[in-house]
Length: 156
Image 1 (tube, helix red, strand yellow):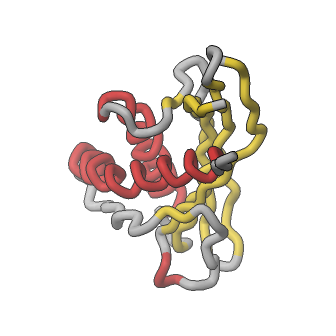
Image 2 (cartoon, helix red, strand yellow):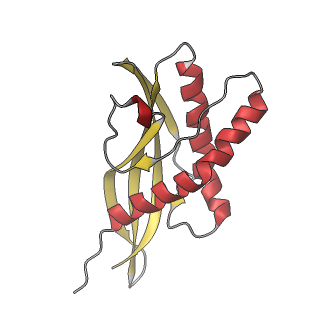
Image 3 (tube, helix red, strand yellow):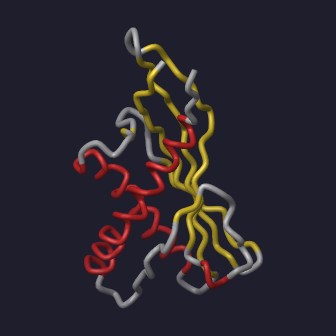
């Protein structure tokens, strides 16, 4: 019997899609605002905890899945439903709240835009909200999260 790691595969699909496409949305927000406050690109998205004390890695994003369930879809497939948490970490500064708002909006748009990019290995559930939460500053790092629900078809 072959075993698969469907949750890990889902997170890797999300990570790859966000890393590939987030720069487009960050650039779009920088251009639309035109106020001189530019966001550096998110260089990498990890599926592990980023080192919050390494300023060279900021801005950074980390993905994790919560409340993962499967439901029967048809005779050979299930739908895997996961609530995903994407944590953003940036360096503390006078504009951190604004920058976190803009990064969060870029990520929200990137996730919603995944539907237009064809088969990316997941679908963001349009019936569930994309929730953005701000946590404040810890040791010079400002943190926010974006929560959303994704669906993917997995073999039974």
